[in-house]
Image 1 (cartoon, one colour):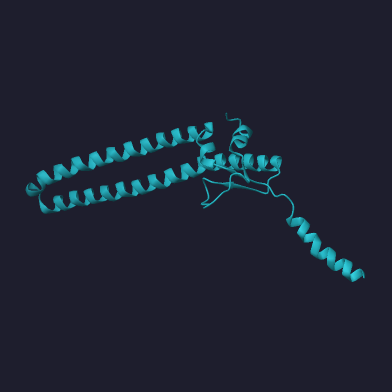
Image 2 (cartoon, helix red, strand yellow):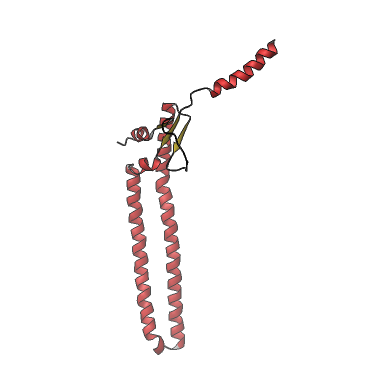
Length: 169
């Protein structure tokens, strides 16, 4: 008899767990992030940094073009050893410019990651706080994940509450 009660309890108990009313939420992180003041500042800082690199690259490209044109105009009148030396200088200049372009791209990527990481952490912390306060099991981010279907009548849109948690109107 005790075994039958234990068996019935083992069968009924899990059904009770699954019968609980599970709440799910969803947000659109892109909608939130784009209105965060920190994000706007980071975007402006990145644009400024990108412009600095672009200006430097443009300046070195103009310098290279000027030297190349001078070389093209004078190549026939130059002794072979001087022409070779100037050609080598142009090749070195081009190599340095390509190396600088790669380093600039890497530096921009690193700066972007460094600036955006704390912003995404702040967003994630706000999402966690709202999730706990609302008692949801899971919050889907419709902007960061490819979810083919969300029944928004059974999932709570928490975007506005996350904005409020972040102090955004």
